[in-house]
Image (cartoon, rainbow, N blue to C red):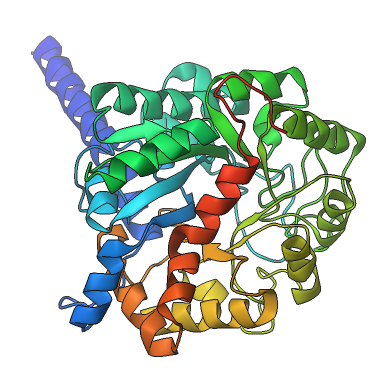
Length: 399
């Protein structure tokens, strides 16, 4: 009898664990990435629909690789997957690997040594054990997951590593092929684990963009949300990383960088960073949005600024609010330096998912932007920037 009871209890425990590991990560993702789109969406005119289908659309930041979904399948969770991105007419999507997030994460001040939110998430998702306790391996596991999806569906999904890859993708799409190009990035330089040799390792794994910091100070320097709230500038290791990235033709992302770190990078001869996902501080006064003067300095160096879709950075939760932030960015930076930086699936809300980007095209028309300005913001500026900064060939260094 006791043996039978133990067997039953063991079976119940196994069933409970299976249910937990199967369901809990999905509940977390749904809670952290709410979609605030009305059931019937927003009205779209024939003019907006026609314009949208002619656009070459790109987005500088999304985090679906964090959630261990098969992105080749349409999901009811989150904001993005390959079918929805293709439905939204997206040509190029930057996908970043998130590897660490401090417990109690906020826009004001976070401790580098705070407990990490991503470790239990990776354990709960049953990701490879090597990724549980190494930030480097955590980034590489996400890169490998993306490559595995590309290998299964090369007709629908590609990783862009060079200008040549980008040109080929855009030519194929112009010929009518429904294929999505992705650029692999890292949200923060902490997966380098203080070792410059990991730049080469990440480059070989397909990474072409690295954000220097995330929500906490790291070995490269200060975060916009780090200790003291303002953060220090580049460390010596940070300078070494930036130099090596420039040698490799990798894109420097200043999202989440402290003001002093931004200044330090911009003072480096030849550096041409971007800021992938943000709002405009004078339009939406929040500590998440960098000072306008620094945004202007990024634009003056030939960089682009990706405007986010979530309420914290645009001070509203509708397509009209995003369009207003984009209008403010154009007024501040000029129409050649503004792009999209949704932060889809990045533990943020969104008023529409990737399949319904036409709502933003309509809102930009309603905002009074010209069709030429909309073409630039929705992807033209991003494609021009990528064609100028990516390595010429997949194995070559940048200019």
